[in-house]
Structures are given as C-alpha cells and as structure tokens.
Length: 200
Image 1 (cartoon, helix red, strand yellow):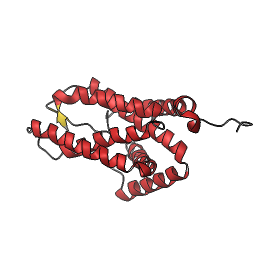
Image 2: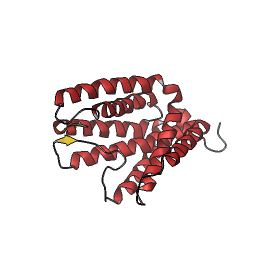
Image 3: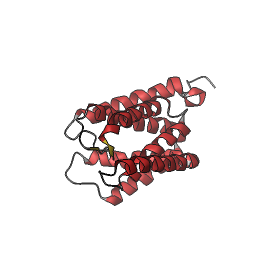
Image 4: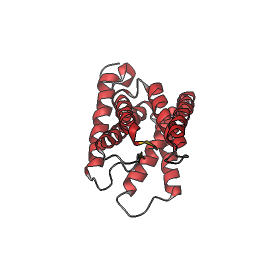
C-alpha cells in the first residue's frame, strides 16, 4: 500500500510499465522483469507497515522495490518460467471470480506449475503472450487507479481492480491480444516474427 498522495504517480508508473510490457515485452524482457520486480517487491514490503507510517512506508516501498527488481533481473534466465507460472495463477484466480469463494491453493499451485512448464516448452511465444497479457493487466489496474476516488491510503488489488465491472476481463483480453499481435509482427524483431510459409 501507499499514501494516497502517491496514488497518481504510482498509477502512472503502472500504466507506463504495463504499456511497455504489452507492446514490447519480448524485446525488453529484462527491463520488464526489473520494472515488475520493483512494483511487486515495493508493494509487498510496504504492506507490512501501518497506514500512519507514511515516511517509513515510502522508504520500505523503495527498498523492497529495489530488492525485488534485482531479484527479478538476476533470475532473468528463468524469467519465462516465472511469467508462465504467474499467468497460470492469474488465469485461475480471474476465472474463479465468476463463482463464490477463492480458488483452493492446490489449484493455484497446479496452474502455476502447468504455466511454467508450458512457458519453457513454447518459450518465445509464451514470453510474447505472457508479457502482452501481463502488461495489459497492469495497464488496466493503473488506469482504473487513476480514475478511482482517493482515500487515506491506496491499496491496489491487482487481481480485483474493479469489483463488479464486467467489462474489465474483456478489455484485458482485447488489450492482451492487441499487444501480442504488435509484438509478433512489429516490435518482436526477427526472432519474434511469425515465419511465413515458403520463407526461411
């Protein structure tokens, strides 16, 4: 969580990082991992403090963010598996919003393992699709945070950015597909393009 005065810059950061991941995640994978490592590490660290400890909260966010970014960059060689695992867990959690209750931890774990295995098998394309959909989700979370009413403390809920808004999954799907196509045909470079039949 962050003080509400930091909601707008944090939301802008989410939108910027989400856009970068969505349209150029394959080419900029290390930067994407560093950015999302910073965000995840910062949010995880700052959530350990009380809402009244503003200065400590911000400092803890920065320290946790730096540590998270370093860890993600250091683990770049397994980044594809991490992307697949994250997508698997996110897909199960998102699908479970259509039924009461939360998914069983074993279901989330199995989905994460399946996502990691699939990611390493289809590394190039899973990286493109994973960063496109992951970036699209971050972009949506940031955009909705910019439009949200401010309170005393901003607590982002990345898997439930807008409860009751049925259009959000559809917008996420459309943005993810668009980002994946842009990466496949424009920003992915030679190795990210689909090879046409009859050409080497």
